[in-house]
Amino acid sequence: MTSKQNNEALNFKPDENYIDKDVRSAHQSDSSIFSVYIIIVTYNAEKWLPVFGQNFQKLPAGWKVIVVDNASTDNTVAALGELYPDFNVVVNAENIGFGRANNVGLKMALDDGVEHVFLLNQDASIEPDELEKLLALQKNNPEYFILSPMQYDLEKKNINGVFASFCNPYACPELLGDAFKGASKDIYQAKFTNAATWLVSRECLKNIGGFNPAFFLYSEDDEYARRVNYHGGKIGIAPAVSALHNDRVISRRPMGHKFFHKLAIYFDPANSSPSLFKVMVAWLDSLFR
Image (spheres, rainbow, N blue to C red):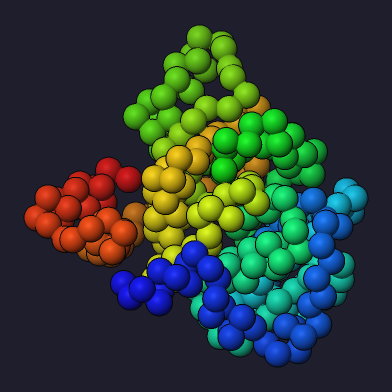
C-alpha cells in the first residue's frame, strides 16, 4: 500500500475527483443544521430501494439522507429521484468501490459539522425510532466510536447469520452469556461488526478518518475496525436496538480472496514490516472470521 493511499483513507483527499462536477458544485455546506447523515452506497440497487428508503420518507428534524451511487447501470438513480425526491443523491462517474464511495458522504458530513453518521447498506433497513435509540446511546457513551444495532433478517425471524458471528464470546464477551441468563446491558463492547449498520461519531471521523481505498469491496470495515481499536476507540453492539439486513445464504468468499485481503491489513505500513508470523496470522484470521 502506498503512503498516498493511506493518506487518502485518513484525509478523504482524492475522492472528490470521482464526483460528477454538477453534483459537486451543487453541494452547499450547511453547518450544524443536521444532527445525523444517513449514508447509503448503491450499485445496481433498484430492487433494494423500498428496503432502505421507505423508512426515511418522513425524517425527524435534523436528519438527512445521502445516497452515493457507484455508477449503476440499471435504473437506480432515476428511480431514486422518483421515489425519494428529498434524498440527496451523489452520482459517481465510475464505480470507485464501497469504502471510497462512503468516504464521499463522510467528507460531506465532516464539512457540514454533523455529529453522527449512520452507514446503511443498500440491502438493509432501520426504523427511525430505532436509530434515535442508537443516537441517544452514542451521545451518552462517546467512548464508543462505532455502535451497531442487532441485525435481523428481512423477515424479522432470526438474527442475521453473518452478524451472529460477531456476537460469539470471543468477539463480544458477555453478550450471549447475559442473554441466556435473561440479563442485558445497553451496550456490549465488540471487536468488530460489519459496516452494514454503523453509527459513527464525528469524534471517530476526526481521529480515525475514512475507509482505506486499498479495499474495493470486502474487508474495508475490518481494517477500519482495527484502526479504531488501535487508537483506543470502542466498537459496541446495542442489543435492544434492531435493524434488518438481507441474510444471504452464507456463501463464503474464496479462501484465497479472504487471505490476500487479510495480508493487505497485516502488511499495512502502519503495522511495521512483513514477517512469516504475520502471514500465519493473516491465514488463521481468514479461516475464522
